[in-house]
Length: 441
Figure 1: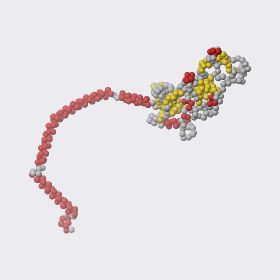
Figure 2: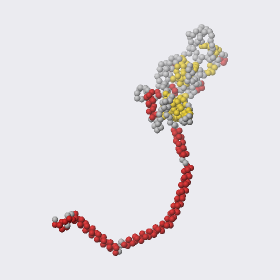
Figure 3: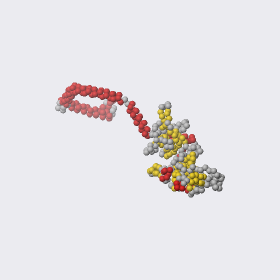
Figure 4: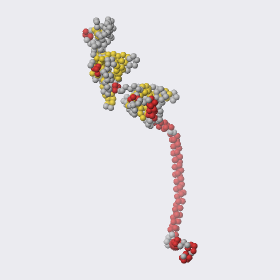
């Protein structure tokens, strides 16, 4: 009785099956009884108590430490869910409650001694419920802490090798509960910048939380997807809000932080060089989409709209949309071709060509009938003329002798002219004084 204080707790011990296993099985034979936990010393004496609906998970005096984990949601965790360190059970969940703001859940845990000494300031806790599936360049990896965590859930913790452990964690310290083991290696980024993207095509497969990648490296995520209708253009468009984390990008060329104006100028330059947002397939198996940021120098010129609530980054269609659009344009141009009129004109042209061919055949027949006899007479006359010329130029004919004599006289005259020209060249004064006077001189 002197040990009963306000910290003393009572409950009815009976057979129970919970997340931590079965308890109170002995009561099936001996009957139920009242359990007691004296509680921490130093409390005020008390004589009236309210019994607990459930027995406490951890009783007073059990060596170890209490900690608090903060999570976005409770998930499959419950009181008694196991906690593992290197796949060895070292503790359990003892309580949980909704945070004061209603935006998170505080999970109370207890780590048995001496394992509570393995928890440091940089220790990371993650939800180990179910199967932990990871896909990387090595293939598909499936991990689980135990068969029990697959059934009822659980928590695991470790200190990443790339982090300094820090000082040992104090009793009651609060840690973040990550969704998976992969998440504990992600660096926490404080700065997040919203950007607005507009897509005209379907965004099926794109979900809130989808990654935003710059040349294959994640630099943000999708935070909102809506649907708008433009009354002026009478068309739908899909605004997608994303958040980029500039701290993921390492800037080279100076340690000084860039000002807002410098960042805007840098983004304007990148967009002028072809930086565009585009939907890409993240998984061929599930059809999930992601937002990719890449340089497309061949893209049409565009600028960032800085005037709205969020800066608007230009987008381009997906490769499949570009192919579909190109085929559509070709079909539209083909539809504009007046094939029916061309067919009629072609038929008329063929008919005219047939008539022309018939007329040409008639003309050829007339030429054969009229021109051929005239051509025959002309050839006969030419043959007669050639015979006469041959007879005239024959060496035995009088005309031939006369022609030879004329040619001989012409040759003599040419020789005399040559002698005269030679003399005049040697005695040019003979043209004035005569041949004899010129000789006397």
